Length: 219
Ligand code: SF4
Image (tube, rainbow, N blue to C red; front, side):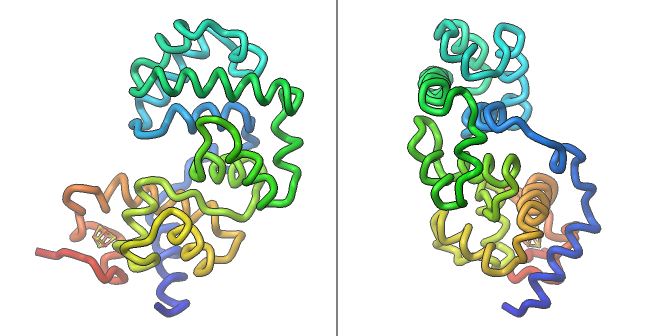
């Protein structure tokens, strides 16, 4: 793995995809946290529908969701799968944020990265990916969330070991890229995974980085 190849992958993907505008906009940490909890094992389309359903009944705030009716949250989240567990986690996490952090996650996000990550990981329903999404997108902290696309694509591209777990993949990517590029590499690997490097049959012939990929299948 040379630095040139990793940089070339980033440069090529940056040129191949238009980055969505929302990635640089200010994001509400609580809403991002709730959206990421809902998105676990769920297609983006269904996550968006669940958030939309929930927003029709409640503002997405710790206060409103801590006091919301569980059955109403469950009903809103049905489209997203695992809705009972997710509803329970959302109520619990809202209560804790309300009681422990006065309803404001910014006090956690202003901590140094590892302390903030640790505090987020203590919250129900919050695993490493959810914590890293909130830290990267809402607080500009130098971390790379590893979702299913980032995990698969970075391994196929040889940017992370094939048998690497979440932390191994995250640290491997972080060691290869400059912190200023963490958000971009996270987003372009997802876009590559959705459009070309699909889980079932990757579309290697059309893939913009096929000349840089050790796993390409051109037959
Ligand atoms: S060449 Fe194929 S395996 Fe490699 S990144 Fe592209 S789609 Fe994935």
